[in-house]
Length: 217
Ligand SMILES: [Zn+2]
Image 1: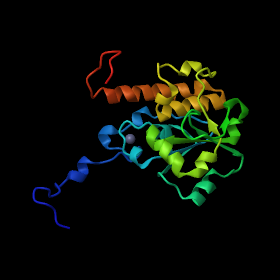
Image 2: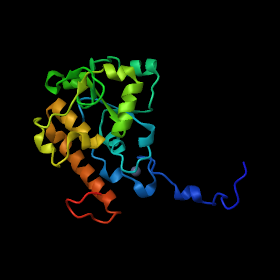
Image 3: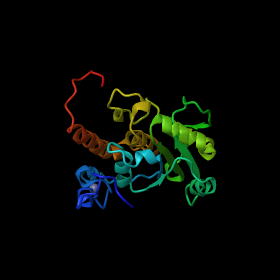
Image 4: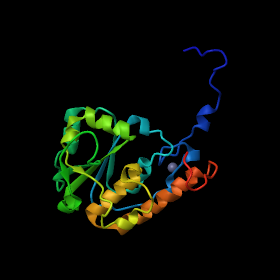
């Protein structure tokens, strides 16, 4: 293949793009220092929109590397048979629920965390912008049928809500940790991971000028 004039690949450019073998991110954006091993009781399935895979600020990668029981599938429209097999009851896992706010556009069945048995439940999260996650829901009817778990602001893990955010402004990692803490009734289990995420976010923000509190972007 020929290259346009002036766009010949530079020798050694692959070295500049070297990736960390563990987190698979560019070395200068390696997030391994913030991995907080966490023994989640409820296994997590992350359905990640392809546009999230390379997001430097994406929280799903840190979540996946920290949780003991976590699996990620990347895609927007999944093969129905393969998705059905993935979501099917397996061993002790008899129930699969989708972490998704009840107020969103598509109606669906809802479920409360206190009615679920943590060790028998698989939690599914959609990792993408709200627009993309809604599109994933539209494109995958199987996901629409899953009982939806919404975050409750007055959950027992109340102290985890340490920011003046609405639940729908939380990152995938924060929302998932809150849901798992509520399901497993073990908020302490997720505090170290949330603290590590805060440090990760602070380190990312360190590249930018500090914004005055209360100002909008
Ligand atoms: Zn790394």
